[in-house]
Image (cartoon, rainbow, N blue to C red; front, side):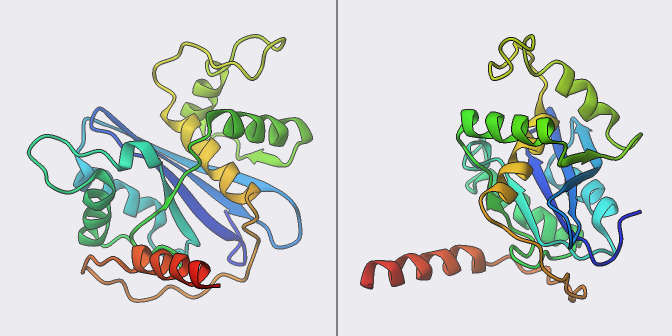
Amino acid sequence: DIPEDWMRFAAIDPGSQFAAAVFFAVPPSADEIHVYDELLVRNEDAAGFARQFRKKVDGYQFDAYIIDKCGSRQRTMGRSDSTFQHYAKSFAAAGVPESRLTGTQFFFGCEDNKARTLSLNARLNDGTLKFHIGRTVLLDGQISKRYYAKDNPNKRAKQKQIDLVDCLEYGVCYLDKGIYYHEPERPRDISTEYDDRVFEHFKNKHKNRQRS
């Protein structure tokens, strides 16, 4: 079990055939990232994924939810909203607990494939990425098929299903960009109303930078 004073966050790779999530925890006194759970859902819409995701996070305070930037910007036929908006609405409707920084919305994951690969490799090599035995079996299988031989560890393997590894890379990059440990807050009452608080926050932040 993860201690209550550890910071938690989750990274998500949306999709209609496969949708995935990896769950992370950071201890207060060590430069470590613990990968303690996974979720891989087949042939479910955003609402179905949200219901299963809630079972993984219910009762815990998460710092943030992270999502694949490229995939979440897409719009599918017959829908006017983006995948990002569709998943945010589905999370709120399913009663997914709000994270401290993103509510039932998301931060975008790193788009730079090379940066993500290098960041993950660095963590794997220095031993600061910890996997909880028996909790990430599917992720372990995808990692083994992600790269070529050790003589070229930065080149991607021709493996189609790497949803969980993508989530792993998003999570590692999220921390390596300078997000630091802080004391988790008590869970708040969740709201089922969708809004653009995250977008407004960053829009105002950008305006302030332009003025200075």
